[in-house]
Image (cartoon, rainbow, N blue to C red; front, side):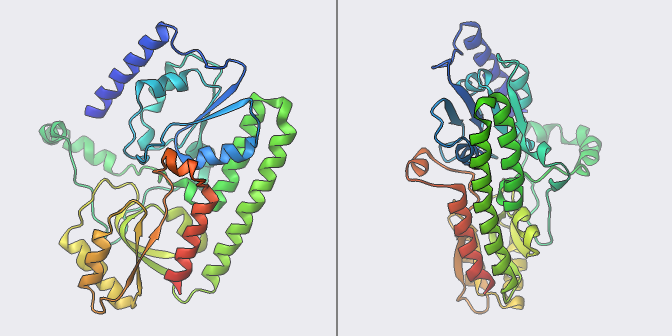
Length: 336
């Protein structure tokens, strides 16, 4: 409820800026493509190549991840006047519909990536041992009793797993979809975009083969995360199993004693030598699992969800494929 009210206020502010003529492009001769998170931004950047007539805007570049992002009025203004808007389309993007409905550019090409995946989109998974969500706003607590039956009905409606970019197979499919959409708004450069996309897809396919080869040669097929787990698409692609403290979209940060105990038992029973955390984690849960295990000698490794990127990261040359290569190196070690 609080998030909805805040969004309505932000949209109202943005609309007032629109009415004052505050949405004109800085350079009206340029095509503007707005993306929400870094993987989309990098894919578009690769497809467009060095075309200086296209501005690519990344909204989330301050280190805030997809699930915590709240658009500012200036973000809504930027979207309102762009030529193409690319977003994931899951529950974290529940603010998008209102923004698109009030957009100034009614000819804007809008790309919902989850929708574009079709049947390849997966439901969120709550696996054995995972911590359940139990956070509520104060308003939710007050309305809990009267909404109980309504909530039970919606508990059975699984949300889609938003972390679609962490599958190289998805990346290949989505890059081709983005290429086609970019060609719609700039048909004069269709040949260049097609060639750029083909070269980039070849790199994706090469890395995909490296993942397949690594898993094929692996001694174990199970990885344990003392953290959230946003890698379902990646693990499903290669037939890997996992255990984790939280689902990928969880807002929880503290694991309960039963969850820790479950994961410690899995480490001991499976004889795992590695525990994995995410790049933005303090590693506290992974450390607790290690210290509570029988061997107490596991190495804590890092995998990269690539959703909380900063402007500094971009200036330093971060790329989608570079981060996925880091994930491959982690898996080589974790799988043995």
